[in-house]
Amino acid sequence: MSFLDNDLLLYIVIIVIFLGFFLWNKRQTKKNRQEQKDRNFRKRYHEKKKRRNR
Image (cartoon, rainbow, N blue to C red; front, side, top):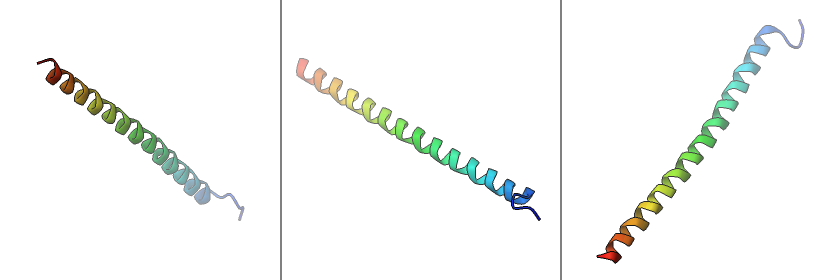
């Protein structure tokens, strides 16, 4: 029985795919959170600007 039999390779591939998805999802979540933060900041800025100009 070899060290790298089919079952072991399958498990390694599944783990690599899971880790890749986890890291990608983490990066996407961070990017979306930053975009939401920027949108909220711009929205508050424009609301304050409107109030000052009245």
